[in-house]
Structure formats: structure tokens, C-alpha cells
Length: 215
Image (cartoon, rainbow, N blue to C red; front, top):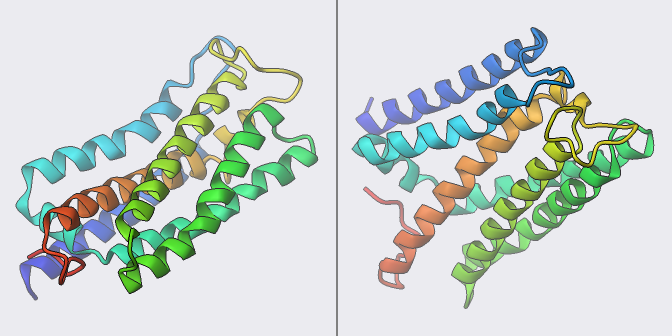
């Protein structure tokens, strides 16, 4: 087995272990808070994985090679799953989530998810302006997370919860919804980072063969 294959397998095992850890911690209530506690564990679960990936990318040639060799079309297609964010609006309709969180998070996710297939086609065909479309998709995706995380914290039952009302975002701290901020969001953030790194590489490469994996 090549070094690249070993690295890829190791990274996917890390992703699976990460998802399992997030589920176990959610089951044990590690992300729940009381009204006098800021959601530090939840915020750490969102921020640490992308930071750790950044450290690994900068310090390991194998990680860089693996990240840059992932098909950009696949990375872009993964963003289509963001349409599941409309479930926030459904939960809001049942009184389980506040509108101050559900609207920006749900609509933002839906827009990114619906736009992703069109960007995949542009990348696959190397249509004029495909790089701009990839950039736009990833910028919108990251801004959506900024809005969702910010509104989630502000609408929560904790000291920063300036927007909290009768319904809060506390349901996002327990399973199964806790897997969204503790695994899905940081996973997609890493996907965004890899996509932008590949886009930078593609912009520096000759037009012909710009989508070829890096070696």
C-alpha cells in the first residue's frame, strides 16, 4: 500500500473516530450548559478541528498531499448535503428552535446546498468563471456558519444569550442535534478550507490540467 493510501485511510479513520467521540460526548451531556455557563465546550468542538487540521496541513507534507489530491468536484458536491439545514425551519415550526437561529441557519444552508450542484457542473466542465463560482460557494458557506454559530449562541440559554426568548437553542446541545455543531459544522468548515486551498493551487496552475490532483 502506498504512503498516500495509508495517509488517506488514516485521515478517514480519524474522521470516523471524531464522529464517534462527538456522539459519545453528546450522549454524556458534555455540551449542555446551565444559564450561568457559556457554551465553551460546544464552541471548542466547532473551532478545534479546523485549527488542528490547519496545524497538520502546515506541518505534514503527507497531509498536504492528501488534502490537495481530493477531487474538487467531490468536495463541492459534499456541500449539497447542506440542504438538510431546512430541518431547522421545521423544528422552528414545532416550537423547538427560535426563529432568530432557524431562519439564518436554515435559509443559509439551503442556499449553499442548492447552489452546490451548479458549481459541481461548472467545475466538471471547467466552464468560464468556475473558479469564481467555487470561491463564491465556499465564502457563502463559511459566512453561513458564522451567522448560524453567532445566532445559535445569542439565542441560547447562557450568558451571551442576548436574543434568547421562550424558545432557545439548547436542543442543539443534546443528541442527535448536537452532532450538527460538534461534527457536521467543523467537518464542513474543513471541507471549505481544503476547497479554498485547492482553488488557490488551481489559480496558480496552467489552465490545462488545472484540476489534476497534486502529487
